[in-house]
Image 1 (cartoon, one colour):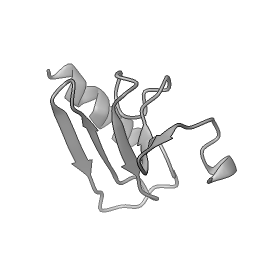
Image 2: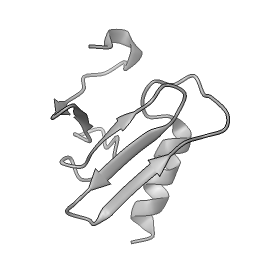
Image 3: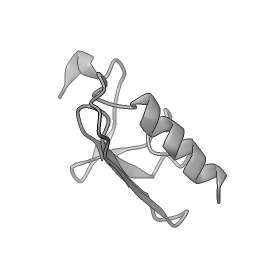
Length: 80
């Protein structure tokens, strides 16, 4: 859908993106979420009991997998 904006293949389900093998929403490939332009995101992993939303006060250049989001996802899963 967004073509070169992602720079890789993506998987979608029920209007949300699936984490898949790239771990966009954590290590569980069945976790899901949605990124917003600039770095915002929301995600959930029901199997791990994790849900997270992130909005920022400074837009970034990424459509998906903003480094700030990915650092937060890693920190949340590490804290379990």
